[in-house]
Image (cartoon, rainbow, N blue to C red; front, side, top):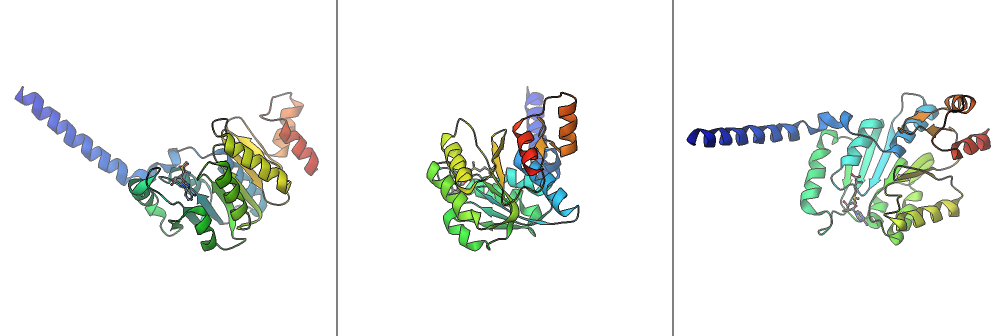
Length: 243
Ligand SMILES: C[S@@+](CC[C@H](N)C(=O)[O-])C[C@H]1O[C@@H](n2cnc3c(N)ncnc32)[C@H](O)[C@@H]1O
């Protein structure tokens, strides 16, 4: 009996050590996490526009624990990344804020954390400076619309504005995003709960495969010529429009 107890204690000590290690090396596991579709699209978009030696300014509005911010940092070549979050009690709170700060601390030279509500933080970000903006804060119709309008001027020409929860579970997000896209005449892309649009002319016609990887026009034509089913025939229209 005593032995059993001892083994149990040893096991706990071992597990505890493993958890500490897991935390310590959390950032090393970023490559295993999955980037969202707008991020993947953005990578291809900017690779094709700028070549392969460029840096982007990025902003995430609503970061919670920083998980998605970590994915963005992992996938895009980031110069500076603004993290905007109020971490108000009730929804996120101090512990979540702490986790986020810790999670992103290995990138502290690139990350600028702005602990404010999005409509106040907007003044801390220079106009025309952001290449990739990701909105995932308050999901009510009013706030999504407000965030889109407030941060629009922060995004550079050819930049991408994306966001999360474009899903039937968040009809407010869908309504606000659809309206915004229509008001500004933007081509709206949606996939796997993500939405995004390019600010300005779409210079790089792309489509996404079902696994979220991007293809070029040539790939797309190959799909069409071989009667394979691309993800969304809308992309075909887009490509034709750009041609
Ligand atoms: C859905 S979570 C973000 C999840 C995160 N983007 C991810 O995918 O890992 C929403 C976050 O937005 C923050 N938030 C909600 N309303 C906000 C507002 N008006 N301004 C700033 N942050 C806000 C909350 O504190 C919360 O941390």
